[in-house]
Length: 259
Image 1 (cartoon, one colour):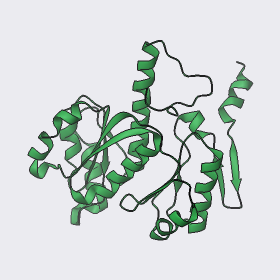
Image 2 (cartoon, helix red, strand yellow):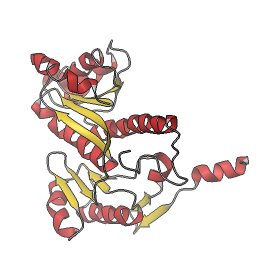
Image 3 (cartoon, rainbow, N blue to C red):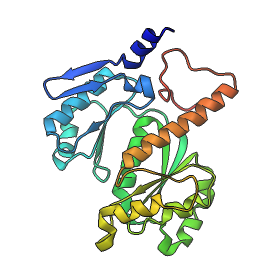
Image 4 (tube, one colour):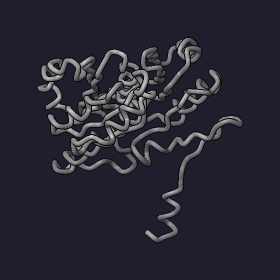
């Protein structure tokens, strides 16, 4: 491949213009394994639903997903899409349009407390839309650490662990010191006073003495799931390569179901 051909391949994105407010990168799934996703916060209801429709039609390899949806979008989604499969999660504040792919891999999603559930559910909804298996373990924070220890056999079997925690953000450090799987920490904005909207949890996680802990932004359940997808894809593509299997040309990473 020449240098010019390499550059053309690098920037050759399929862009879908949506009226005068968006340019959708509908080739992102094939290029990176992670599709374009609608971030609904601050968008109008019509903009969000229109973008979901465009992604559903232009990227048939998987469902279309919108995150951070306001109530008006959650209320309108079911009626807007008629008989097309749609999943509305009011806790996660997500809308998924299209059939969910069969899951592969296992990602354990933990919350320190019940109030961390919206962030964890955003991660779970994203994993489902991306074709990754997820399992929730709620309210296992360090204030009653025996609750965590009871779940350790399940965590040892996971390909990846996502931990959502607010307040002091201690749970991800504990989990990272107990399991072999990669751990992704999500600081949440739960807490008051010096918790500072999740900043204290984020700083605690970034300063963790448990080596190998990865930290995403405050309340970013979507980002944690996106990173978990890359980990699961790496595991399953490696295993398939060791068995002598190869992806067919043009088959985007992660687009197939469980092997």
